Amino acid sequence: MKNFFRFEERGTSYRKEFIAGLTTFLSMAYILALNPMILGEAGMDSGAVFTATALAAIVGTLLMALLANFPIGLAPSLGLNSFFTYSVVIGMGVPWETALAGVLVSGIIMIIITLLKIREKIINIIPSDLKYATAAGIGFFIAFIGLRNAEIVVGSPATFVELGSLTGPALLAAAGFVITAVLMVRGVRGGIFYGMALTALIGVIVGLIDTPSAIVSGIPSMAPTFGVAIQELPNIFTLELLVVIFTFLFVDFFDTAGTLIAVSTQAGLIKNNKIPNAGRALFADSSATVAGAVFGTSTTTSLIESSSGIAAGGRTGFTGIVISGFFFLALFFSPLLEVVTAHVTAPALIIVGVLMASQVRLVKWSDIGIAIPAFVTIIMMPLSFSVATGIALGFILYPVMMAAMKKHREVHPVMYGLAVIFLGYIAYIA
Image 1 (cartoon, rainbow, N blue to C red):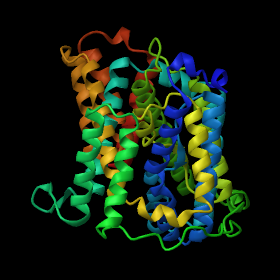
Image 2 (image 1 turned 90 degrees about the horizontal axis):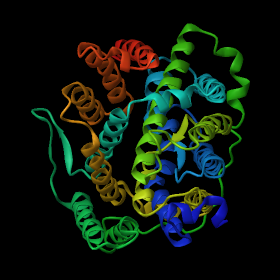
Image 3 (image 1 turned 90 degrees about the vertical axis):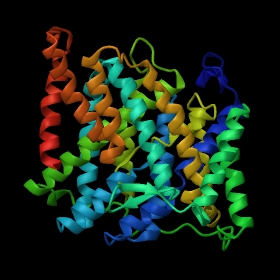
């Protein structure tokens, strides 16, 4: 097992990988509650979606672990399930069954372009400075998500955002952040996981988190959603659905690219500006979307929450084995997840944001032509609340800046092509 996952080469151990897997699972566990809730608003059976969510996470994460040896967890995307429900089903009036078929088709297309190595080539030609900016930007983005989930930062009609009231659950999250930060500063391995565990325990003791109503529960049937996407395939050939499929495809492509770049950089896996086994990782990601659509859930993708496990020491696919194992157990012990609230996971997200934002130091800030697209990439991820939008704007500006400095020959032709595609994307969402 150690040789298969290359423990010695990556400087890890079973203990590190186990703690990393558990940490990532706890950081991802919210999706088991949120995905059924969001897709339920689209008219889907919440119980079936719960089971589909867990199985999609298990299949996707195992594929990532065994094919690519990456410590990355996969599950339905929180952003794309919102797009599925609020934009496609409710906004456009598309039946959820047909929208699910759109997810399936986008996954199949993604597998095809992955097998043709188009995705891997695009990721590998991205300039290193933009990769560092992407990793740092995602760090700021997930820290912002953590602060928002903790209600430490709240909306304001006057200033858009402001400091929230540090009482109740927000105070619990703030205390959890301090506890986790102290553990990290003291060099405690698995400090993020232990911080989350202590935060949850404190929450239960002081009455801010309810004691689980039960321990064991049955597995809800997937019958209401299983295979529906396949049955609906004949109904997707409309202009409206083609736009929907393209959006699923586009956001998944670059959210996954951003996640792979970020976690690979954080784990020190990038060699010569290339991600090892990128093709296999992308194939696993695409296959997870197809499997998830068949089970009955929206787009399944690599989650940036995986960075919490990497921060806890995860370096190989064995972390993914552990993650999958806990998702399997979650099928039977779902009531226990009630204590893993947004206020419990928020401190971990903020700390991970700190760790990932450190990549900003590697950007060549002395070169203004690189600094401008890098800065826009970083700042627009949290401000637009979209990884894909931040990447798009940075990728548009990069070839423009290089051309202005008469360095256009140093830019790969594909980067110009991406800039044009991103322009179209920005025009479409604006």
